Each structure stands twice: as C-alpha cells, then as structure tokens.
Length: 344
Image 1 (cartoon, rainbow, N blue to C red):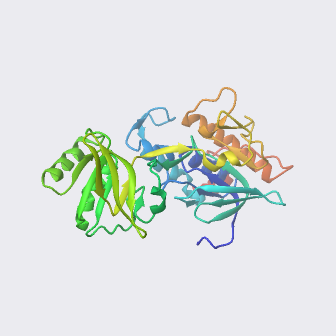
Image 2: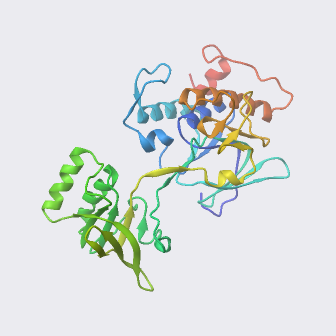
C-alpha cells in the first residue's frame, strides 16, 4: 500500500506494538475485533526489543524468566490467530474526528486509517533516534545523515563517520569495511566505549590494522558546499579539527517522546493520558489508553498492569462498538466461539 492509497477502514487502530499493545490485539481478537497496529520502531516488541531484548524479565505470570525478545515473540504467537496488520517505522502525526464519529489517523509515512476505536499503547512515548544538536545538520537528513544503517548503503570511496559507542555503532563500523570506504571514523565524546568486550576487541584490531580509527571529540558544525555536506568541524582536547565526511551515521540510541500525542486534545496529567478504570477510555469517545502512557489513581507502571488494562479496554471497545448489547464473559477453556476464533 502506498502513501496515496485511500484510508484503511478498520474497527480498531492500536498505536504501539510493545507487549501491552500485542496483548491488546489478542484481547480485541477474542471480542471479534480486528486490529491494525502502528509503531515508530522498525520491529515489533516496543521498549522490550528497543532497550533490553536480551535482559531477563522475572515478573510475567507463568514465565519465571524470559527475555524481552522471548516475551515479544510469545505475544506475537498468541496474537497470530487474529492476523493483525503491522505498519512499522512510522508515527501517527494527525488525528481528526469525523462526522460519523470515526477517527481519521494519519502517519508520518503518508498512510491513514478510518477507525471506529483507537487504542494508545505508546508506553512512555515513541522511541525516536537521539539527535545531534548541530545547526544545519537536518538539511542532509536522509541524504548523507542517517540515524541507522541505511537499507542499501553505498560507501565505496566515501568518508564515513559513525557517532556512537554501543554495540550497534561498533558493528556498523566493522561491517562497513566490506564496501571499501575511503575512511571510517568512530566519533565519541570520550575514549571509553559502551560496547561488549567482544565487539571492542574486534574494533581495536581494526584500528590497529588501520582500517578504522577512533576520534574523541564532538561535532561543532557542518562543512558543506551548495550541493552536499563535505566535512564536520570537531572540538577535541587538542583543539578544533576538520574531519572529511560524506556520510554521517548518528547512532546514539533511542529516547521516548510523546510527540504529536500531546496535540490531540485528550485530557492529560503529568504528561500521561487520564483514563477511567472501568474500561480505560480517555476523554474522547472511542479512544482508549493502556500501559505506561496512561495515569489513574493507584497506577503502577508494570507490564502485568498493562495486560489487565488491555483486557478491560477490549471489553470497553466491544461495548462501544455494540451499544445496547450485553457483552458476555467467556472463557477460553470452554467457549466454542473462542475456540473457533483461536483455531483450536
């Protein structure tokens, strides 16, 4: 589907593909509600996958120990019978109520959805790349400046500068060698790095062989001609330095930002969405909020709390979509209807 396509018509749009958003897809499915899911990250799993995919989690019911990646995979498997459609690497930027009560949501990728219900499961915010505060740098975004390794990097004969010090930054530096760049520089504000011992050892070997180098310093300004960026003006312990640069990969990790969410007119308290605890509805009809993005008396920012909120929000959505109808409580152990939905 391209950016010029008509809006996607859906009963439910879930913003956030983290653990709570994934479990919400499952709970909505049990209510017969199909969901579309949008997330700014390039992968499903939210904060668990962005920040600690390999770290153990000990407070998930029935799983004495699991990693963030394992939890994400299990939740995707659980939601799979309901065939959610994921739209990644994009953020919902605009939201407008329609005459018929539906919501028109538009994304940074140019896609849009007409949804009867919306569920904000954005955690502490959309995880966005950390930026370098350098005047004029944005001019070259997507052309010579990237916040991740480009899908099809062309580095032959190019001067590459990678800003960062974690595993992803060092791996990008080491992998770049296969493209025969003119030079590769890892730029960091201090000499000590934050990557694993294994990657630091490989990086040190590459430095010793002259394939790459470490430059300690910070970017002051961009050097450019009319058509392109040509270099970076650095400040170092020895003074200022001009570093040739054809491509700049800024790999400083991610930071959560609420972004456009704060402009949608929803009631908020302390940068969180106010909800009622009956169905976790927000102040706008048809919009619910679950997980760390919401607030209410007694709120606890735990994944297990988000699972509870997702369950009640799904029941709330079913009641909203079917006014006047009693929403039965069924059990997956015994309900033929639920067994049919789950394919068991």
